[in-house]
Image (cartoon, rainbow, N blue to C red; front, side):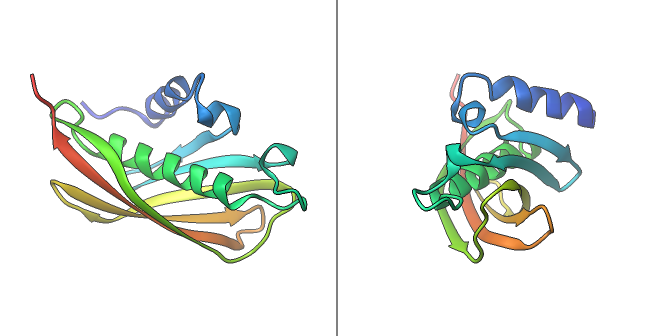
Length: 141
């Protein structure tokens, strides 16, 4: 049975409670057949000392969004998913507003998956380009 967009987003909100995602105020805002989108506010909680968005917060947003995409699009009754590598190229600075992460699969294999996560600002400027590799391992009973 395919879950509705509202059900998927509600599930995302539920699993983010009492986690780093809640601390960073990451919120899943859209979901489709091949993508997941989340947003995060840019404020003093995620700034470097000089008042710009911290690259680590950007990477946390990217990994959160990519990992959730892997969970949504794979059969979690049979496998569990773990991130094994993430890379990030930070291209532009942000001081305030929101950043948005859109995760899409580049490769969706049975064992390994590769996702591209584009981080943009309120004006759709590319802030960071990230790639996340995940692995699906069979659940043992």
